[in-house]
Length: 215
Length: 328
Image (cartoon, each protein chain N blue to C red):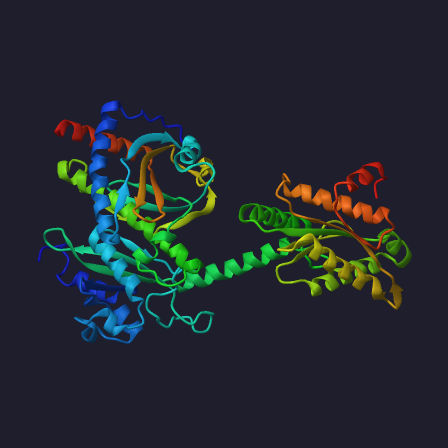
């Protein structure tokens, strides 16, 4: 593991990134609502840079210590490179089966597929929303486009602190984008976090500085 | 054409001939592109497919789910994926390993990508399909091998019933499950009486035969949810899910009697065998599953102290006997 030091975001940078993400998540929320034909509530995102070693405890605080969660990982590359981790609370994605076009009783593999499908649209909507915002004010860092790899399940029914083993993570920092998705009248909660290599976090810092200059 | 520039139909040719399935659907699910891979595997040439609704052409496609999937890509301008691990195939195609395969269809991984019009809005979806049959077969073989290994690692080498490690894991999960969802279960710990004497009198091979025979007779009597394992040398344990102590005692006593009534025959020797049993039931006030083992051990000790070849149900009063008595 490298010992790269990352400076935390300054207050101004965090505020600006917060602003940028607020708009992006607003958009993500409305596309999800349109897609699922249900009222999707996205919390105001909280953003911070977290050292990977602190991640298990942070996730446990975020999600709750006494519940079992499932998690899906998905890598993205292009404008930014990293891994999105989508964590589902105890009710999981079951509550969305009908909205996602699943019919009848879900067997083991359909449950897994549903989990992956839901994770894929959550990460796609959030990251896609961010790219769209970035495209609106800068082209300095190249075209803001991402491609995604196939998502995979990293954990089923484990305590949140066990999702990530920091010893196995190559990168030292994570940009923790704390968004809670809830869907009206459905027992559904999910959280999103992103792991990025250090240069990715520095790139975001550059983008944010440009955003500050533009407003 | 300038030196080094691609000929105009290069991309088209590659797309057509690549050994990967590529097809494009518009918002109305009409086929806009259908490459050779798709044509050859489906037996439907591109000329036949172009303009055709995909659900009309393939009525067996899971419509609501696939519709949602394609809509996701268009509405979110996002990628979507289908993995053979969850859904073996999108289209049922024959695969290219009829002899070495062990599968009767092609496993497929698919990636769905938005295709944008000039103004950057997604208006159709390109599906890229990879033949994942080789990976699937290798993964399934690996999984089978791991399952076998896992099964072996849970078994006692001599008797073939579960080993102590597995018993404890099961006991713990049964304990947690019952604590979480309610209900009850019982466990019985039992021990062959004077087993050392069997070994000394008839030899160790005879002793082994007795262990194997007892394990077999008990296994034959179990319900599918019951678990029997060898806990230690001549000590066995039974986990009886959904069974209150009364039922466990009746069942345990039947097993005890069955073993007593039929001596084990080995090498023309008739070896009488009896067992002592200790039974106990789950209770919400127990701190952990280990406590359950301790309780059945106390009951087992009482059976030994009481003259062997019997079953005792745990009661708190028995603790005193166990503490005052010598180690059995």
